[in-house]
Amino acid sequence: IYEVGAGGTLISKGTMASTANGNLTDIEAMRTMEIGGQSYLVTTSQTSDHLTLWNVDPGTGSLSQTSFLSDSASPVLELDDIRGMDVVTTAGGAQYILAAGGDDGIGSYRVNASGQLESISSIPDNTALRLDNVDWISSYTTTNGQSFVYAGGQEGGISVFRLAEDGTLTSVQTWAGGNANLSDGRPIAAPLGDMRGGQVLDNGMLAVGSNSQDMTYLFEIDAETGQIYLSTATASTNPEGMAAAGGHLIIGTADGLKSVMPSDQGGFYFRNA
Image (tube, rainbow, N blue to C red):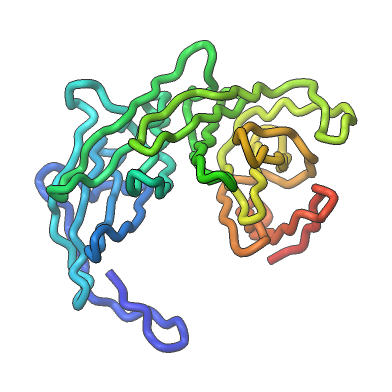
């Protein structure tokens, strides 16, 4: 645990050891959330397949566990090998959305009025979706306030879901890789392949990196329906980690970091970070 000091320095405030249920062993994703003035941290564990909620002390930053969910719970949850997490705020409150590669599925969760984690919706993979070995998950809220979730992994496609105000997930589109047309009508081969990273940008576009194809794909998101349309693609070696910063996309590749800015025409401007 660190405090951010002057000039962006990190000041150590202590450490947290895993408890008996192994909830801090092999953490793959974690996110913070504030509800009613209280700060929470949610962590994942690939070892125990747990989703754990922590209360964050506002003065010291110390953590105290408030609840956890297990992949062995009934009904069955999508918590095995969680690889991606995002937080989406709807009119019904804030929801955690998770990508569980070991379960080939995604799920939505929230903190209830009692300060406990609860499962809202679980979506396992099926023949109509592309959630096998799902690696990443990202979200977008349209101009009319509707939230959508985008997820993909190692099945050569992207699954799009509508996230309702109560946190339930409904499939609205599956974008399968292959021969396609760009948004301007030009044909392009877009097999997608093994996608290790995806990120919605601040300008409302979805960027996806294909590790197996050494490509980064850019999709336009329909501002009303949330559905995606391929805009352009560009070569990038082993794109994996992705993060949005303003209008830029930061990509972690085998060659280092690359800073990307989509052009007004839907293309890419690349430079090394």
